[in-house]
Amino acid sequence: MALLTNIILDQLLNHTSIRHFQAKPLTKEQVQTLIEAAQHASTSTFSQQYSIVSVTEPDVKAQLADITGHHWLVNSGHFFVMVADQYRNLQIAKAHNTDPYILHTTDKFLASVFDTAIATQNIMVAAESMGLGGTIMGSILNDSKRVIDLLDLPELTFPLLGLAIGYPADQPEIKPRLPQAEMHFDGSYKLPTDFNAQLAEYDADVANYYGSRSSNDRIESFSHHIVAELGRSHEVRKELLATIKRQGFLLD
Image (cartoon, rainbow, N blue to C red):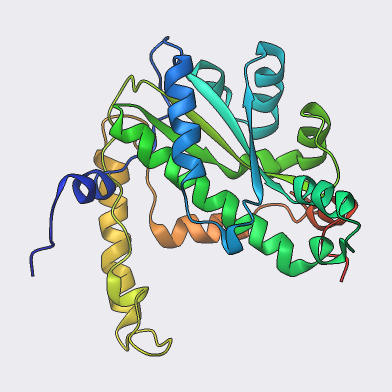
């Protein structure tokens, strides 16, 4: 069955992560437009529980590159750090002599994570509509405490994602996604009875993608990728929970 199509769907279905950028910074107007797009994303209870930090200092960008392990980010046209944020609402609570306990709870931490993630995706979609491209980077979590210190983040904030945006210097091929039958269920969660067979076919598709793409080709499948992820050191990011709590979240 053919999918429906329009300009927006074409853009969404042809998304690729861009890691090679032209040496061209974004204009002030472009940055403001991307922020405006973020602000019009859906937000839980209209509480707008996120903030955005534009990182422009070369030294700070270099340190973020060290943290993430992705030094190409310094060449992006603009770099954002997307911050889960209840600190601003804490100031409102104090000004109105209101108990701020709820802001410290798991519920409000998750709400701020949702708001941040949705706003991040809005920036990416807006950027691609403007002829730009980029990569959303969870790798800033490799040393969240250092990111907090670099950006002078106050209590009840947490750096959730990095976002490198710029003018693409290449156009990567589109990665194949999981078959819908393995991630979309009708009524209740139930993997298909032929899950292993479908997964084997998907592994072959992914292996073909990695083996035939125009740059950085390698031998890889989806299953191998997941197993490799699970094989990383248990020490990596083990301090995340402690850092989140130190920022004042998850105190319930």
